[in-house]
Amino acid sequence: MMSWRVRTETAEPVVARKRAATETIQAIRDGNYRTHDGRTHQLTLRNRQLEANTIYFGPQDPVLSNWRVPDLDSKDVEPERNVPTDIHFKLQTTLAAAREWAEHPEASDDSKIGILQCGDAVRPGGGFENGRHDCQETSLARGTNVTHSLNSASARPFYTLNQGNNFNGYWSDAMIFSGGVTLLRDDAGDWAQPVEVDFVTSSPVNASQVRETSMQVPEVEQRITDVMEQRMGKALRVFELHGDKVLILTGFGA
Image (cartoon, rainbow, N blue to C red):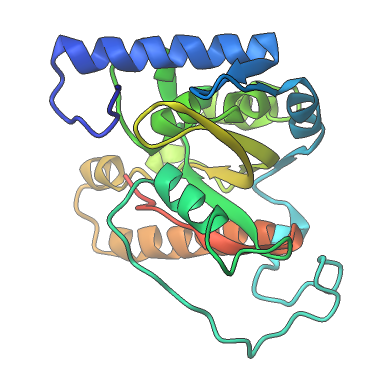
């Protein structure tokens, strides 16, 4: 049984992660995968719908730029601003949290799940294929079909923009919405029942790089804070636009 929570970079976990990545890529290409109970789960239609529901939002997108203003065109025609929000802090992986909520007794068709992915700005999936890195994005790339969205023509402008300019470590407010990503594996790395969730992929400020190149200018900390507030506000607006009410957020920073 593979484990993705191993932090030591010995050969064994690297090989296991690389094997899992290869198997996931093949399953996406084949359009199906089989769970331990012998059932075959089809992915062809899910992949097609995921690609169709992949949306690129540029850094100056007018709808996202006005994230502080209620959006009357969202799926909530009259957004309820006084509804209590439950916030839970848990020490668990994004994959485990998504599956836990999907199986929660209070889960319903109205409780769409949205995952904020701390994405590599230049590589779809963060280079998960080589198995060398174990982080949120590579774990999700091994355990879902999200890379089918990230490698699509609709998502390509995100990577093209960032490959040409890292914006002095701030990166950009560009982001990708992937509607209907299928969770393929469980937290142990085994094939599991399919669960659909939405993803927003965004790259946070590389604060360490910004600080190293800013020559300790006092104003830099405030700018980092302002840029991150703006970026996270835009990500939340994307979730709102698509009716995602259960949000799984992670450590969003570098």
